[in-house]
Amino acid sequence: KQEVTQIPAALSVPEGENLVLNCSFTDSAIYNLQWFRQDPGKGLTSLLLIQSSQREQTSGRLNASLDKSSGRSTLYIAASQPGDSATYLCAAQGNYQLIWGAGTKLIIKP
Amino acid sequence: DAGVIQSPRHEVTEMGQEVTLRCKPISGHNSLFWYRQTMMRGLELLIYFNNNVPIDDSGMPEDRFSAKMPNASFSTLKIQPSEPRDSAVYFCASSLSRMTGGQQETQYFGPGTRLLVL
Image 1 (cartoon, rainbow over the protein chains, first blue to last red):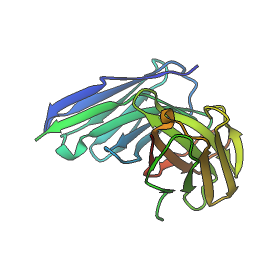
Image 2 (image 1 turned 45 degrees about the vertical axis):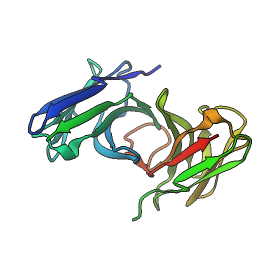
Image 3 (image 1 turned 90 degrees about the vertical axis):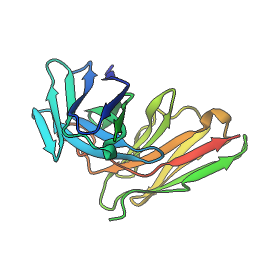
């Protein structure tokens, strides 16, 4: 049974810092690994999707990597801004179903 | 496109009442998902439809929960009778996906319905 873990559960850093959020999964038989952002009281917004055949994806200041063999994915945020404050969730997809991590709550201090 | 639309955005009801949540997926998407999010359990998949057909309802908590998708542009999640432990945020998401195998597209989420059962 797939299990997805995110570390740390919460992170607070000063504005401008580069940071890394971690996601690990127990079953490497996935079709893709996705990162989402959730703002308080809002829905989830897809940030990056890495297909199983890919190693990384980039969008602006965000870069996500995938290492299926070790069961790990990282989300790198460059030059963090207060607007990046949110909860970041990763999800591993097998067939149609997404298995979710509990999320990392990120606070960027001005 | 307006994205996934959910209504109502907030619902407060008393225990024992029937609650109906509504979802309009993105036009052209063939997959629809209902999720429940709580602090204790995080995001849980309740039911998955593909081409309007329920494929996996193993996440539906019990018989009090039911979901329908009468056409490609509308789905409902009904709770009858509601209980305080049903209080949560319910999300609907849609995607353009194969049912099994191969690359899958990302899911697009609605803003959610915040349900409070007193």
